[in-house]
Image (cartoon, rainbow, N blue to C red):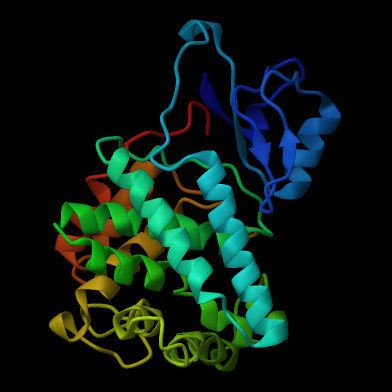
Length: 297
């Protein structure tokens, strides 16, 4: 099979891997033949590409996943529920969060020799939740590369999974604005780091270092980040790992205002951001990413 950008999809192509919604509902099954209506609906959902069958590969090219589809879906659902629960009930199920990161870590340990095939299929509306899970997977892999123990991996993973939880407290009109933000709006968006830190610190079950990730993931080594303009070693190593994973996943995601960058292009962009990003963390994150790109762009 091969991955094909939406603009190159044609009726009659056979879907090789199923497409799911953010809550785990099957949208399109593997083996299904594409139609014009299906392709149109994919565009409406913001899905930029599909895996299709290709006779050149004799239908036997399987892409291993470092985390199973079931675990990924359950993790995305958990992040969505955490956001919604915090917004409506002012509560986060911390036990469920710990279980989710432990499940991901267990699977990743079992498959740690598999490079991440960094092309999951997701919609614009589910971006925040899928993004949180992707950042967590990359961070756990980086933590293993950095020889973290299980306690450290859990601290890292909890912070990575909930690094954007502070967005719950932002004005949704500003958060979802498609056009350029004003200076005042951008300052409002920046508050999500502090909001996230304060939210996570209110739960004694959540390690302080996990909370610090929410606070520092937009800092940069050269002091150009926020909220405190910290530099170098002033930023905790967990935060430096998550900031790399966060930037990389954002670049490789389809957004309403731009298409996803290919993996090689995104890697180049991230490396050019050095010294604002941590070189050790860049190496740890990208050593686990397969250098693949679209068959058609």
